[in-house]
Amino acid sequence: MNKYHSLNINDFLLGRNYIIYDFKELNRKLYIYIKSRSHGCACPKCGTVSHTFSSTYHRILQDTPIHNKQTYLDIDCYKYRCLNSNCPQNIFVERLPFAGSYQVRTHVLNTFIVGCSIFLSNESTSRILKMLGVSVSNDSIQRLCDQLKFSDDPNVKDIGIDDIAIKKGNNYATAIYRMDNHQMITLLEGREAQSVKDWLNCHKKIRLVARDREGAYAAAVNQELPQSVQVADRFHLLQNLISHLNDILKSKLPPIVFIQHGKIIEKPPQRKRVQGLCSPELLDHLYYDNTPLTDDKGNKILFDNKRHDLNSKQYKDQAIRRREKQKKIEYIQSNYKMTSKSIAKAASDFDLNKVTVKKYMKMSVPEIQNLNTPQNYKKRKSFMNDYLNIIFKMMCDGLTNQVIYSYIVTHGYTGDKKQLHKYIRYISEDNFPNRPSNRVNPSPKKTSIMLVKRHRLIKFLLSVNKDMNVNKDLIQNLSIMEQAYPIIKIASSMFSEFRSILMGRNPYKLDDFLKKYGNSIISNFCNRIKKDIAPVKSAISLNISSGFVEGNNNKLKLIKRIVYGRSGIVNFREKCLLAFAASQDDFNLQKFNQNWITNPV
Image 1 (spheres, rainbow, N blue to C red):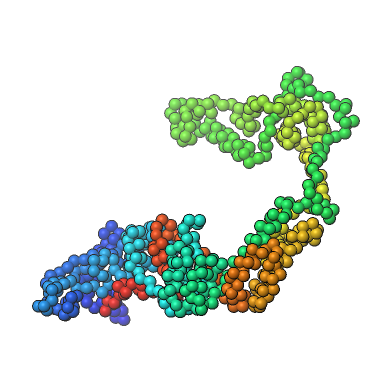
Image 2: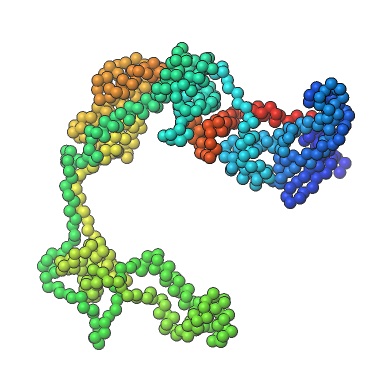
């Protein structure tokens, strides 16, 4: 045991001026008792170092949990007397290096709490920390976040800008990101040009702006940063063209295009159903009435005349419960006697009424066996009552389902044909289990008509990656539709040409495109491109886009849902700035609050 030595970790945890002399655990709360050593302390007013004690001062601070238990530091520290006669501060308390004045938590715990709340709402953070051994309310977490200071970099050069919906259709904000590391710089209230102008006025070193087609942002950048290069987003440019072409195709094409024998037809022929009726010659010699079938003695032959499927899960479960009931009755009869004490015990063991137990004990063996068959409840009156005995008689005579169906339909049946099929099938299965199944169903006549829905056609035409396997029939009939509707080929050509220009590196081809289609059905789209021609050409020539802005906006929307309920753009901005900063490798919360830097030595 000589090679093992006890370690004193006081200096590591609290510094050389404080010692831990005791600890206790009460109600899953851990109290660590700390005493301040004798040392000099500087006056906060004049800075004079004093070693003269005046009295002691008692503080209790919550610290990071140990073994998920709430941990508190019970500290006895000193009050000092200032030796400078000209100082207005006569008595002062020594400053703790691990906690600020009037704080109830240590700096380490504050950092721990804020770190847990970065990607959680304050309420969720409070509940999770409670399970980990930290007692803090959601409002206290918000106050800690308010103490963080975020600095704005006026030397930023490349930015991406876009709008984000705080409440869609009602309230918006403007998000600005750095282009080099994709970090958020700020979140401005609203999406008007004036708010963006005010911010850009303080960032004159910006030389490149990636943005969408929003006119307010274009006007703000043109006015405040006329020398900067603006890059329009290629995704939004392509989406704008798709939106134009989509509206045009919807107005020119019918909802469904019908093709038959290589030609477009306006209306499809009506489908006729084959009822599967037998020939009249086969039915002429048959005659059945709906009187009940009797045996040789004149007694009615009962049969299951209901439309239920005994092979379904419902009836199988009922059969299982009936068998369990049989076993219960047999067990009661063999293990209990017909005495009041025994009946009371059986009722208690099986949670039954005493009257029910007596009934079970008096049941005979045939009555118990009859539980295997489901009870034949009285059938409700329906339109099928006039044909049930006919169906049963014809099955007894060995006629097929097709003959039975044809006979009933030709003898005045006007009800639902599907219901008739079901009754024939279920009466056969429930009363004649060995009877061969020859189910008859109405089947539609096959037609050679091909139908193409408009939304599928538009999606295929205006898609970059066309799925040839899914749209095989559409592709085979595409030339037929192009001859009937020339707009299909025109729209497809416009989309392909513009996309190839957008993905290329020659901005001069855009001038040819605008000249070619300037007076066409997409003239409005071309005019909008001409008004914003420089940023669009920059998007073609430069390998820069605002795709990262769209990705960051998705992250922003997630944070918005997390902090739902915390009103105000200020809280939302702080949460977003903290979440984006946390993704950096050199992230340290103490950079945002210098008062939380711990230096116990």
